Length: 240
Image 1 (cartoon, rainbow, N blue to C red):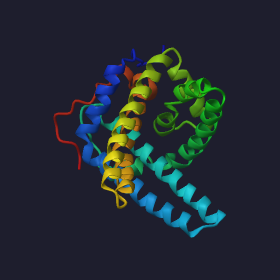
Image 2: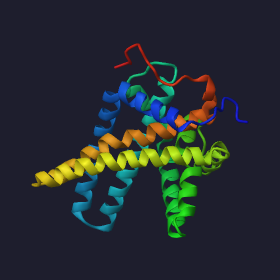
Image 3: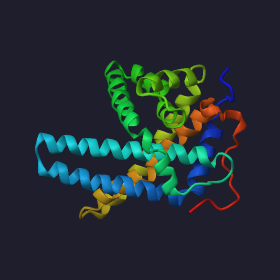
């Protein structure tokens, strides 16, 4: 068994996910706003300008933004698992910066592989989505390469696939419910409010999945924390 690995409990992972979210709400939402709003504006301007080159640049901007945010959240979860956040938001973004390129590469291959799996009667896509779910944290924390992250994730998840899948499913349903409510409110208001509601939904829900897969990574023995790490129940105020 992986050193530091502990039995995955769907309830425990979800409790830790929302505990970390609540205690670090300002940092997470602030980071999401900076990344997704600014990236969304830049990407939108490039796409509206038209042309294949600018469209490709818009896609690259989006990929970079998502990679930055994932790296930031992984570092934040790693930091708070001792009971408090010791590093500032700037420190966390900076410490994840060297993982941006491999995270982008992993994200592209992950999307292609899972997408092909969904085309093949859905089940293979769900299987790959589960088995590769903790590849991004492996890149950030353990400095795995793009290809190595797939194998590392597979080895960590193996034996706990159903529990990991259950966590991912619940997180997906929660995000879907939040987005549906906000979009319904936006549609009822009209006058472009649905666009704003979509952005707000993305900002609010983006940290949930990233925190959950980070918690899973450490619980499965990644980074050598596993059972030795305590779920975040900070009583001291986090760093600014």
